[in-house]
Length: 365
Image 1 (cartoon, one colour):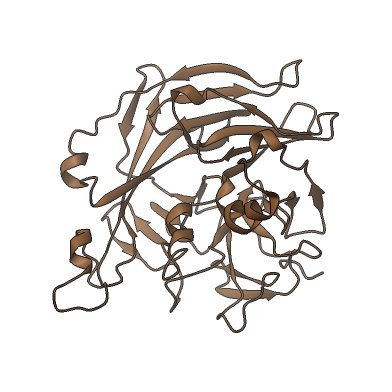
Image 2 (cartoon, rainbow, N blue to C red; image 1 turned 135 degrees about the horizontal axis):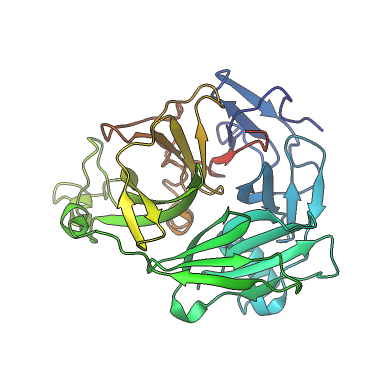
């Protein structure tokens, strides 16, 4: 089984193998920005047929096979860990065949890997239409997925490992901290708070009928960051966010194709004492990697080939990318926090990139 070359120690981007004619479900390209090379690896998932990546964390990929069975898989080694199948109570009330054919790509919105004080693997996911939390432990008698969290207070939108605990962010801005290191197998909620944030100008700058927002938690030098991503729902060829009515001009017989695109990022750091998100104007020598992966902040002194004070992002707009056959997976780039500019992450002539790109962050970064 071919693997990612062992000398690669910086974040790399997992991509489809090429054009539709060349592409197959078990071949991937790995773009290393450090050495500016692309490595094409056949049979990368070995015997995991039609593997679909749903998460990237701590150097591992969380993938589903063609029957929706979940695995931990390391592209840097031969290691593969089969996780428990999702129990019926967590899955939609549809047939298994319908679930695999139509819902598999939308079932897991985020997946991260943690380690408890006994070095057991803990996989936590945001799953389902209601965006709830579930976890499983590998290496224990716990052989199933267990739901947890507070779904009544709204859906979850991001999860990360911070200070050896799980921090979960909800759509309404609520932040929860969960501890998996207790004497019981069930996580304990140790904090729940909603920091104040000044977004007074956001509705004017990013009107909801033109923009969507995605939010991420990131750990950076011991601080907890919030990253808000503003995505133009319809962006024309000149980069202008347009109204949906623009898509069908009176002179056109076919609607224009104006894919969604990320336009701006805002970054905040948490002042725990004041329970307030404070605007960050510069990341210094740091670079943030976000998308379907667990969000990570690294110093350019530790990784080569990246620019400081930037955000390297991939497309994780799961619902929209799977609804439209013309585009999706394309919303990738490099955002400069100093001047607000964006540039292409890599050269691609396709608006539809399927499967979508994923960051892989080696554990030695």
